[in-house]
Image 1 (cartoon, rainbow, N blue to C red):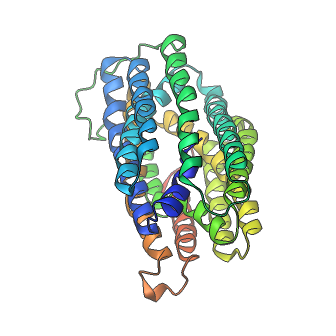
Image 2 (image 1 turned 90 degrees about the vertical axis):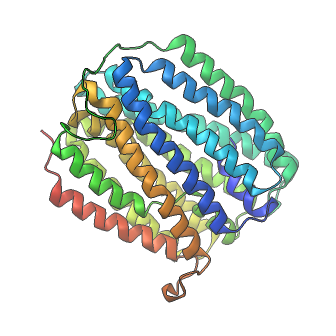
Length: 375
C-alpha cells in the first residue's frame, strides 16, 4: 500500500534527490539480504522455519507506522532499513517452509502461487492507495504529505493481520540440518548452485530499484493517481501469470524459463530507455510483470532443486544475500546515472535502464554457458 508511494514522498514532499533515493533503497535491500543469509541457515540448524518468519513479519509491521512522522529522508532511511531487516529475517525461512511443504514435481507451481498471492495483495494495496489519492488530491502531479500519512495509517491493519494469520495458521516441517559448516561457507553445496549465484550477482548489479521506474513515469508526465494505476497494471499482470508460469517451470525446466525472463527484462529496460511519454512507461511497466512472473517463483524452485532439503534455508539466505549485496551498488549507480553524475554517459534519465539491459544480457550469456541444464 505504501511501498510505491515512498519514492514520490521522498521526491515530492521531502525534496530528496535521486542519489539519496538510490542510497535509501540500496542500504535497505542490502540490510535485508545480509540478514537473510543468517536467518535461513539458523532455520536449518534449529529445525524451525515458522517462528523466525513470524518475528520477521512482526518487525516490519512495527516499523512502518513510523513513516507517519517522517519529516526528513533520514527518517525514511531508518524505517526502510528496519522494515527490510524484518524482511531479511523472514524471507529465507519462509521460502524454505514453502519448499519443504510441497513435492518436487509441483514446486514451481507452489512458488508461483506464493508469488501470485503476494502480488494480489500488492494489487489490492495499490488499489487502496489509488483510492486514497483520488479522494484527497485527484489529478495532482505531486504527492502531498497528508495523502501519504493517510495511506500509512490504513496500511497498519493488513500488516497486523498478516502476522496473526501466519502465527496461528502455518505449520512447521521440522527439517533440521546436522551440518557443522560455517554459515557463510558454501562448502558441500552443489557446483551448479554456485555457478547460478555468480550469474545472479551479475544480473542483480543492473537490477536497480523499481523506484526509478516510478520516477520515470512521473518525469514523463504521469500524475500520482496515474502512477498508482500503472503499478496496478504491473501487479495485475504479475498476479495472473505467476501461477501458470511457475507451473510451466515444472514442465519445460526452470533454467529455460529464467533465461526467457531475463531476456524479457532486458527488452523492457531498453523500452524504458527509449520511452518518450508517460503512456509508454505505463505499458512497459505492465509488460515488466512478465519478467517477474517468469523468474521470481522459478528462481526459488530452481534453488530448491539444486540443494539438499537440510540446506534450503542456507541456500535461500545466500541467494538473497547475493541479490542484496548487488542491490546497493545497483541503486546507487542508477541514481548517479540518472542525475548525470557520469558526464561521459550522455544519456541522462535513460542511462540507468541502458545499464540494466546490458547487465541482463551479460548475465544471461554467462548463465547459459556456465550453468548446465537441471537434471
